[in-house]
Image 1 (cartoon, rainbow, N blue to C red):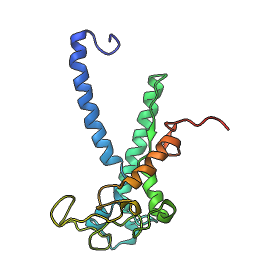
Image 2 (cartoon, rainbow, N blue to C red):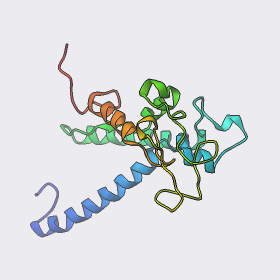
Image 3 (tube, rainbow, N blue to C red):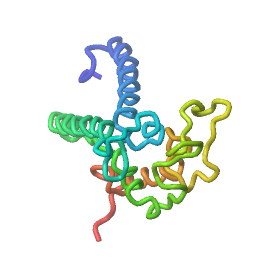
Image 4 (cartoon, helix red, strand yellow):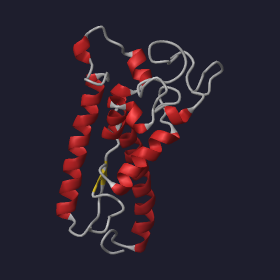
Length: 183
């Protein structure tokens, strides 16, 4: 691959490094890109008595602001890559806004298990931070189809299905992964 490497041996060194960078980068994006301020575990651990610390749907503003800032930088970087490398297809798949819609109107999306910002367990958001996922005494929701989060920090299959649908058909991927034929 002359466009990427100066020689075949150089390519053998390049591709494992590239794969390592992509794995590391994707892991970082996954955790920073998410709407942390709406997770029941964050709402439990970092609760505030100041109402201004919360968004209109009850999420912690400063954690969501960090994700919004990151997402804006990511969109700018994608735009720059597309301008630099004409003909490439890079999609921005929004992992932030769908759960905010779930929080704003949980019943519309089928989340009837105490609202979109609740899990199971104890406390205001049904999260027990002393008994995290898979530890003895931890709890998960009995019917994950009615919740966004099954344990306060992991998303249910029902939420993932709706997020994936938004990526595949829109509006949460720019452009959608599956393009619809014109009407």
